[in-house]
Length: 229
Image (cartoon, rainbow, N blue to C red; front, side, top):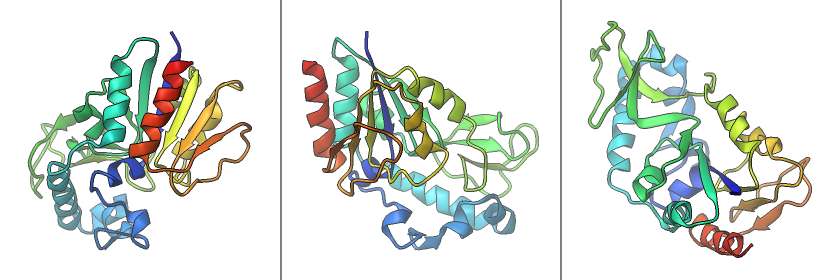
């Protein structure tokens, strides 16, 4: 059975109402990335960082999956293809739409972990407060891969892409590494569809098919075409 691999970025979530820092002159909800999304920021002002992610978590609960999320989940249920989603997004909109094979490269808003052990990960629905401790005594922090931190899932993601029979790249600027380099792991004959209204440039890859549309309209169109193949 052919394997569809989908790499999604902030543009998919943005259509559901989740703001992205790249659309606001380097600010994310009025904060500089350096102040809320780096290990140094957490060391300097952990209360600010925790409050920032508490608000992002609360906001994510108020939005719903859009047509792109729903189309991908529906395609997973249709006969003929297996589907794997690799997402740079930290929300759970893919899962809430019904997708089951989702790998989060940059962590998840609805999880937290100990500062002493990145493998001590726990689900969370509410807030994290300064002084909330993991069983090992470490302060709990968002289970998010911040700028400057390693991306533990990148090798697994590369392995998944290497097995693709078709690759969709949706709503990502292809500027954030190492995620941006994943499409180069796709087999030589694998068709690559880039779905984004801004048409990010793909270098070093021939035969890329651009769909210059938002994810909510572009993804369903490409999936309809794939289903006919």
